Every structure is written in structure tokens, then in C-alpha cells.
Image 1 (spheres, rainbow, N blue to C red):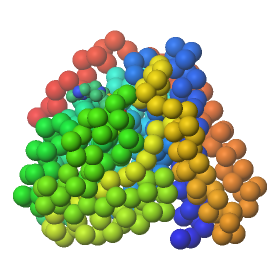
Image 2 (image 1 turned 60 degrees about the horizontal axis):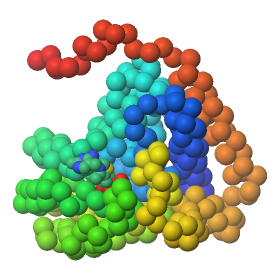
Image 3 (image 1 turned 90 degrees about the horizontal axis):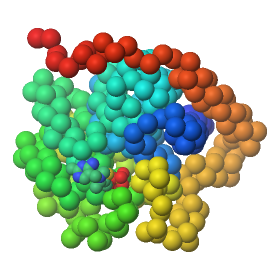
Length: 319
Ligand SMILES: Cc1ncc(C[n+]2csc(CCOP(=O)(O)OP(=O)(O)O)c2C)c(N)n1
Ligand SMILES: [Mg+2]
């Protein structure tokens, strides 16, 4: 893979991480309200998959959505403003952290009901099939979501109707504080997908290059009416389920072990050991990201709160 491509992915992963570290600080200062679910540790999944999509493809995910929003190319200032509930936010300050959106990039959110967006993904895919396009829907969800009815209904119909969906399970081993084997009778996600006649693959979700390759192959297999595919991304969240999680359900050793596979660290080591980048080049990227995030925070803090009338806009779509 080319140096410029890999450096671009490095920049995107560092942006997600830094953006979220600053978000956590703003949350602790009381500047972000509601829930805040960090994606730290899972960055390679959004970056490796979204960069494999083509123009026209759709992206839809759950509430752990900052990484997806930034990777589709949303302006970090407008995303940060949304987190702070400001009028300049991507959802005009009415959605917050869990409801990011980017219509131009066909990024449809940001859904808080576990599994609730899977039928929506199938519906978007049905629309694309009806219009006879080549577009695919990339639908992301957690391991915990595979135990809810929506998952089973959506995979079943997608398979029966050969809908163009790439189902992407982000298996970070936990649904809130519950390990996957305590909640799932079949903890192997690929096996679950096979129950609906769907081809699936388990992928090292900490390695952005592996994620990209697997996604590219799966998307190719889906286009042209060949039906859905399933990828299980083996990953880990380093932080709690959401802010304020006391993390009593896992050991420090377990977290440390996964930290050895830090997705940013893996790419960094690859770039340095293959002679594709020098340390000072990576440091320059880190610094420019730092500046970008600080600019985003300043933009968000200086933006106005929405006008009260905004409460009544976008409630119904005009026919
Ligand atoms: C229908 C529904 N049930 C319960 C919840 C509460 N809840 C929020 S997140 C979550 C865990 C989901 O875990 P997983 O799908 O693995 O996603 P992760 O948080 O690990 O990304 C639960 C149970 C909810 N939001 N919606
Ligand atoms: Mg999970």
C-alpha cells in the first residue's frame, strides 16, 4: 500500500483519537451534555472500512459514531459544535454526540436504540436495489446488538432479497459491562451470519490494512446484485462504555494486553519499520491534528446555541 494512503489513514485515526480525548475533557467540564461513547481503540474499523467505499455508498451506525462521522469527511468543527449542542453543529445542535449526520456523504447517523438502525440499513439497500444502482450500505453495529430481534429480521430479509448491505459487527467483546459470552448463545458473529446464508469473515479489527483489504473484497462481492456479506471486526474499546463507567467488569491486565495492539501503534510501527515514514513526519501529522482539534473546539465554544424556534424545524418533512 502506498505511503500517501497509509499516512492519510494515520492522520484520520489520530484525528479521531485526539478529537475524543478533547471531547472527554469537555464532558468532564460540563460542556457536553447527555451521553458520550468513545471509540478510542476501535479507530481502525471506521478508517479501514470507510476508505474502501466508493462514491454513492451509504454509512449508518449506532451511537458510538464520532469515528465514522469524521472519517466520512465531516468538518471536525461542526461535529464538535454538535457535541456542545450548538446551532452550527451537524444536526443544528439538536442531536448531540449520538446523532451525527452528513447527508452529502450519505452518512445517516448515529442511532441510540441498540440494533434499531439495522432495518433502516436494509431499507436504504432496498431503495438502491430498486433504482438498480451499484451502491452498497455499510452498516456498523456492536456485538451486543446481535442479540436483538432487529438483527435477525434484517439479516434474514437482506439475504432473501439479496440486498446490497455490508454488515460490519464491531466486536469489542462487551455490551456495556456484559461480556459477549454471557449475552450471546453463539458468540461467534460469523456463525450467526451463516444462519442467514450469508458469507462472513472474522478480521483483525486493530490492523487498518487488514480491515481495508477485507472490506474491499466484501464490497466487490456485494456489488452487482450478489447479495449481502458480513464482516466481524475483532476490536476493543480502551475506555468505558460511556463516560462515567467505573469499569469494574474487566481487569487492568486485559486492557493492557489489548493496548499492545493499539491500532495507531500498529500502523505507526508498520510505517517506520517498512521505511515508509520517518518519526518526524508522523510527529508533524500529530501536531497538525492537535491544531485542527483545537480549532474545532474554539469554533464550537464560540458558536451560538440554537434559537428556541429551532425546536419546531425538521419535525415533519414537507411533501
Ligand atoms: C433497545 C435497547 N436496549 C438497551 C439499550 C441500552 N444499551 C445502550 S448501549 C448497550 C450495549 C450495546 O452493546 P454493543 O452492541 O456491543 O455496542 P458497543 O456499546 O459495545 O459499541 C445497551 C444495552 C438501548 N440503547 N437500546
Ligand atoms: Mg460491544
